Length: 320
Picture (cartoon, helix red, strand yellow):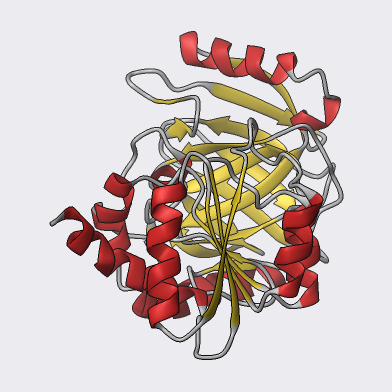
C-alpha cells in the first residue's frame, strides 16, 4: 500500500526532472537512500528514459565532493535525479555537469515521509511564473533591502549578479530541488550591511522557540551573533569549521512554496512562502566567488524585500 502511495510523488519528481523517452537518465542514490532511488529509477524507466541506477557511499558532509566515477556519469547523462543523504548542490561535480548541459534534480535528505508530505503536492506549474518573475527582478536590480517585523534590516548590492529561479523544474542553467522552490541570488561580496533577526530557523541546526538570534553583518561578513542557546550553537559551529570564508554573506533567497512550513530542515524552511533566507559561506556554485567549508542559511519570516527601492514582497506577500 505504501509503495502505491509513493508512486504519485515519484511520478511528480520524474516529470519535473524532464525525463522524456530516449533520454539518458542517471538516477543517483547512496547507501542510505537506495530504496527511494530504486523507486525513482523504476518510474523513470516507465516514462521512457534510458535509466542507469548508480549507488555511491553516503556522503559525510554537505557539499563533499563526489567520487570521480559519479562526476563523469553526471556529465554523460541528459538528466540526473539525485536521491541522496547530503546536499551536493555546492560541488564541482554538480557545477561541471550543469555547465555541460545536464538537467539536475536534487532531493538531499529525502525520506519516504517527506515524499508523502504536503509540500510535494504544490502546484509547481502555477508557481513557476512567480518564481521566474522574482528571479528576473533580482537580476535587473542593483540593490536589495530585506526587512521584517522582528527587526531584520539588511542591505546589499546585486549589481552584475543573476537571479536564480529554482522552480523545481529540471533545466540546463541551475539545479532543481523540489519541494523547496525559491528565487535567490548571490549578492556582491563585501557589500552586505545590517542586522538579520532570525525568527524562523537555522536549517539543520534548529528552529526558533522563543529565541530570535540577532546577527550583525558588516562589510559583507557575519560579524557577531547574540541570543540564546541556538545562537551560541550556531556561532560555535561556524567557528569549528576553522575557515574565515564561512562568514561571507553568500545568498539572498525568498521561499515560494505555500505548502512548506517551518520544521528546522532546509527543504521546508527555505521554501516557506514569503519567508526569506540569508546564507553564509560558499556561493561559488551559484554565481558568486567564495568557496568555503560550508553553506548555512538562516530564515526570517513574513519578509519584506525591496529591489532598487521597489517593494516586490511585503510581509510575505508577492507585490507583482
